[in-house]
Image (cartoon, rainbow, N blue to C red; front, top):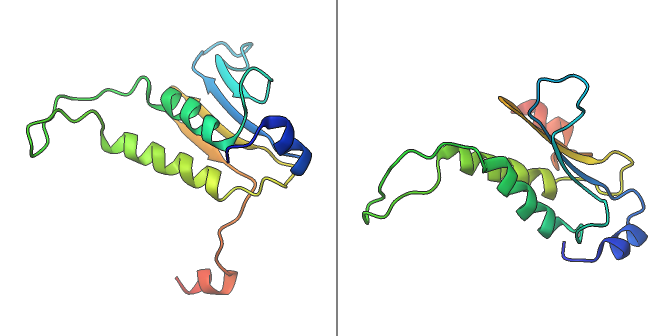
Length: 128
């Protein structure tokens, strides 16, 4: 969660985090912005969360609203949903997998993908 990238990779061989923004219509451009393990930042889960969350919500519109105490609300239900999706992607990831944790932001779509599984038995899931 808070470790140094080199220490994390020594303990978890296939540890990899990847956030991509694909906001261009140019098929030649693979991504317009990326956060990955590139040695330019301390790549632990805590830092990844704060870097990525700011990018996910940076261009969301926030209509003017006041809460019950007449203080302006700075978030919408979309902010809350994106934060929840990001946290769940990080928490439920199997970081020892050879697949990377990947989050992709398109103009009109968000994809959250992790190498993990629900912590529920299949027989219990089938009853739901």
